Length: 483
Image (tube, rainbow, N blue to C red; front, side, top):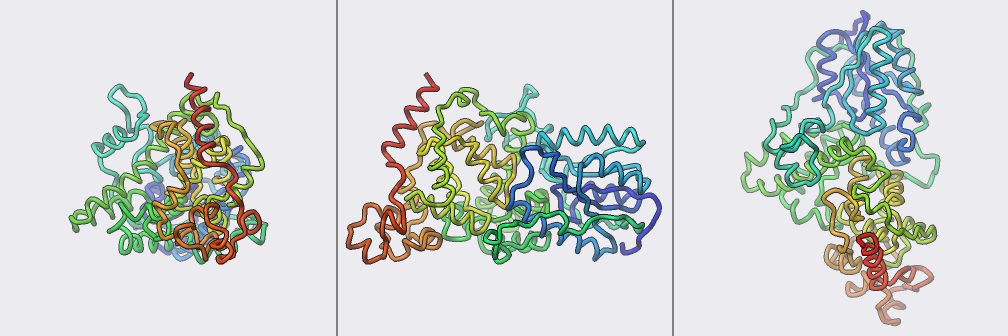
């Protein structure tokens, strides 16, 4: 596998599949020739959905790890930047390659790019070969009885479970040999992926290990420490009860097939874990469902799935949006989540639902504003998941929460952060408050606030909206579009 060859190669175009093992396109490419692996950083192709800052941070480190992995097998990851079609066609001309292999992408802009690239390559006498390397199933595979797309999760997932099982994961192809010719790329720093704000992303390495090794480590840690209590603990933000595998899945450092088969095999070997495993696999199912929806309804990123919601009377206060973004709403569980996001590039899933509900239903700010903020600040920002999750919470999406489901952020905090440990970690101003008041400091007696060093309106804000009044305003707004 360390031998390199200089005959015309097959190009492997990396996208959101940054790994060597269990990569169908790379394995097939290696069957016929040496492989020239490349990554193209293209600002223009995604249009409005160019990578956010947190995703760029992750991508830098993931590409660095992938380059090291490829070098360890005798190859070179060629980093390129510019318009994808122009750059890849130039690489085809320079190398003499007749095939470009890649994993299929479901984002609307990515599908358009695939069509454009396939046409450009045909003019050069080459072809684009796409593989399913990022999902359990191609979105076009799963259909209703009538042949249409699903719009409700449960029957969608039932159909997936009755479908041919995801392919067995494979290791690094034994046929893999890397191209040994001289190909000029750019240094990773030339891609300009790392944040320019020195106060952001500092210390993120202590929270994350991007790359395939980090993905393996995170999966093993989840299995050994969190899977046994997953169904219950996944809702408690103060404990590590979730897998934290979402960024590794998004960037393709870990294949969903491998994760699926690993968890399924564990459940067979340990029947007492079957319920926990099924709950986790259903979360993989929601990921699949989001891609299914985006594939079949490509306007989801900008338009409500339920058309009547495009008439919703959003208020759009810039001042309230900024308070939410900075974790200064006066609702501790909301503020803790927003500060965790800024400090780590991540937010606990239960808290994501709470902060999203607060933005859309308490502040009546358009879900698209929240989705944009998450897109820029989450290391696992994923167009399908991010869009569908925000629409689900807002009530405008497929199989969405009912419009009248409006979380009370104080009660949500008391329910899922009963000890206040999560709030105290991320909102240190409230660290000394007794458990009784940590989720509602505005109700604490003056003496309690003074003893805890909390000065409402000074070092911690008063609630920016009243829950009862905000809830009624939201119900009135939702009723207006129903009428």
